[in-house]
Length: 156
Image 1 (tube, helix red, strand yellow):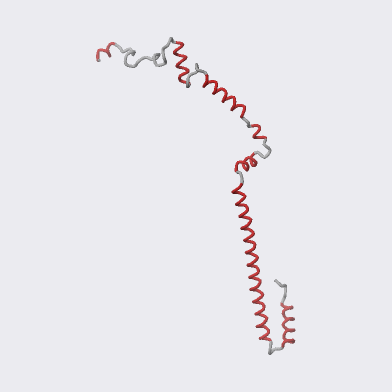
Image 2 (cartoon, rainbow, N blue to C red):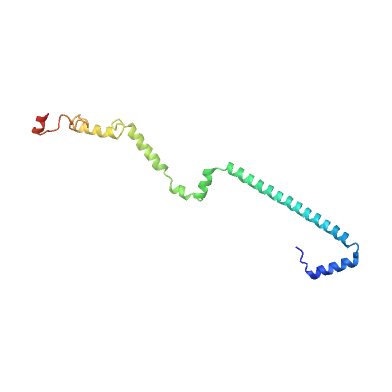
């Protein structure tokens, strides 16, 4: 802390011995050491107080940050982080496509000839094409319409 070499200490000790005298020197040294201990304890106490103030300030900062995080809108934060200029949102705007899809779906649902699903549209088409026969009427029945060879029929 203090940059005192052995020469300076020797000079201080010689002056103290001359001024105080050899008889009172132990009592003076005891008093000086008590003052040094008291100064050190006061310095430690002061440093502890400063450290406590710093911790309180840091806790206040952390408390403010936590409150700010609790009150922030996460969606806006993500949007500002990913697309700060808004160009990406403009490029990805699909509202016209969504409205066209909704119009098409509404038109299909309101058309009475379209049916209610993809299977019914093909059933209507095949019934109209084949004169009223449904899709299941076009397929052979496994029990009656299968040609069985003559030797196999004899076994039955």
